Length: 476
Image 1 (cartoon, rainbow, N blue to C red):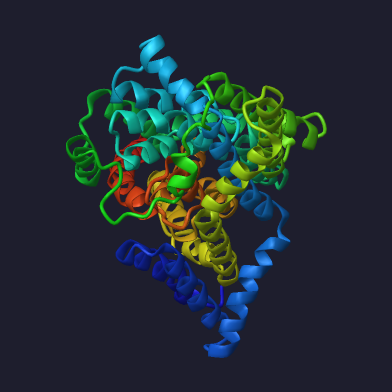
Image 2: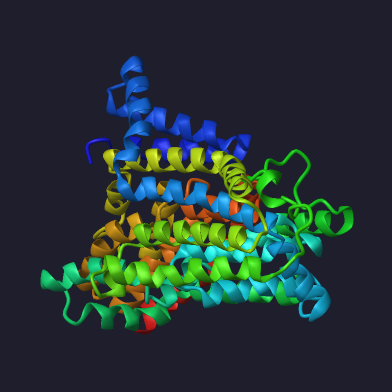
């Protein structure tokens, strides 16, 4: 950790600039540049060269390239489904034929329930929730910020609370190392399961989303956004820049096509079904050992391909029209891809500076056992906020948290739960988080508006979780 406090500057610069200027791309570039300036001993030209090289170098990591390609294909899938009349058919079925979704509450509940049910992978959860619910929330004048909040807060928290997915595999892996090294005893899976009741932030976040949907008691920036949408009919703030252009989100059904909800449902079912299949194949028979990035990539490719066969063979569109719609959707996702590329690049630079390790060193060995879970929760939250990654936070903070718990006599399972919850909370607050960016994409919201409206809710949930961690530290 040779860079010390300087290692905090790049994420701090990127986050503050993003929140104040609302220009996320420029803010991330400047964050990367400030980091490379530190790494190159303040050499301007060397820093410029390293900044450009780091942006290019992210494509050498297969999982990052797959995530970016996944985002592009998602745009194509959304557009072609809309052009097929599937979205309009789905809206007509729920609002007219069955009268199931009657108001904004029903539309948001659809997104909420979708997020609870689909816990296989956070990106898939966000994508499906946004794609399915956005046409209905638009119809009933729900702000895009509110939809983004629902999608974001029912993805990572649910995946962590029901760890039958890559999240569970990740947590068992980092905990298993501590067991193998003799720091603690037990079975990794059993330890993860026993820590679930202590994921206080995740539990509170999921409950809070349901509360705000059912009561409509929004406050802060979210209340202003909802008032704007309901009274002025403006789904986005004036001057806002949605992460996905209208080309993808408002593509009308192809002329002459009869709206049919199955044109939307079948490709999405294929998308969801391919996730466990991909995890099973890549894990060589074990879903928990499978590759999440590869499975997500396979899932969206299969869904786009299936949609092509479905629409062409049923005469909804010809092959050229199908390809044109896919290209149109891919083009609409370019802003998302650019943000993901720069977000991953700043993540790598932060890794070189050992920002996470430095932040962890500030607390390690300096607190008493009773305060252990609460301190670990705060540190994990700050680390995830600064680095934009919950999984990276788990990798750094889990060994530290477990070793601190053992050394200080702090309760083990609340401490593990604090690492997980803190990582997710920080991720929810951070404008450089990939899941936050994908939530803005799925809801077609302005990214900074999503961050600004979700931040007060995340902080309130985090404050309540902190009280529970303090109580757990003193009682257990």
